[in-house]
Image 1: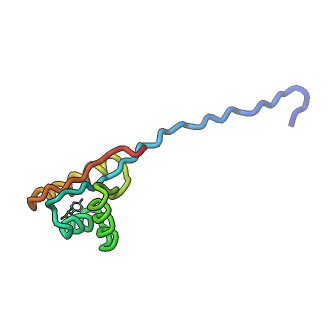
Image 2: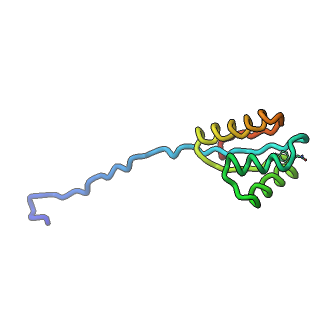
Image 3: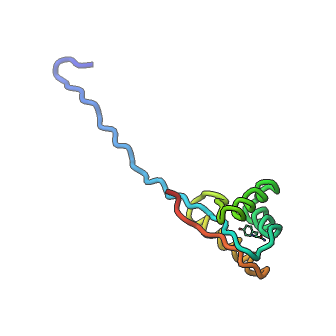
Length: 103
Ligand code: TYC
């Protein structure tokens, strides 16, 4: 309360500006050699996808050329994309998972 001697001024509230970390897409790329069943197997094993989801994502890449598997932090995206691509490589398939920043 003001008694005539004191002037009360509102305090400035400084909001800390935290930059939101950029999100990355993991993209499944179609090819002519990897069997459909193997693609769904990798999606289930590496990305914990359910059967129907893995089939839908695989068929999207098969028809459209690519499909977004998941959107997540950069380090997770890069680790998972490499894990999935390496799994295919070990099995002798050229299946590719790429990462790219979200708009
Ligand atoms: N096109 C492959 C085939 O016909 C299947 C496939 C689907 C491969 C999706 C890769 O990302 C892919 N056997």
